Amino acid sequence: MIALIQRVSEAAVKVDGEVTGEINQGLLILLGVEREDDEAKAKRLMERVLTYRVFEDQDGKMNLNVQQVNGSVLVVSQFTLPADTKKGTRPGFSKGAHPVDAERLYDYFSDLCEEKLHTQRGRFAADMKVSLVNDGPVTFWLQV
Image 1 (cartoon, one colour):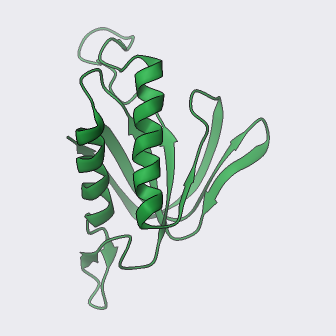
Image 2 (cartoon, rainbow, N blue to C red):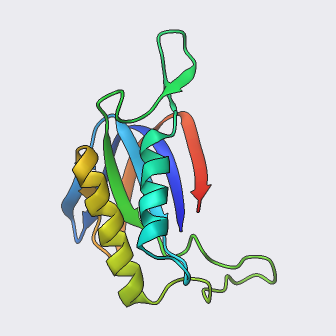
């Protein structure tokens, strides 16, 4: 399971012109689910994301996590993250989870986040328009 996290001052996602989720300070989480992923991996990744120290403390060092700054998260499914890009000029998607499994684990991950802090989400498998102001920019790839 992969999370591409971006520290944002604001982020939003729209489906068919309707805002399905928006946050102010926090993390935009693009979540990619791989074939071998399960609930244990989703929980481990959620714990890692929510405790990853990407926000600055009073000394300007990245020592605080999203919970410590009372931030929010916006979780967006991103089936292209597990793509195989090693050969050729077209990505391969065989490493990605079956859509039924991916949606279940996306929902599970998002539900776990909701238990910890304010969480918004996109709509699984929809054509989404994501906007953000990346604060830094600060972006990290986390994988379990």
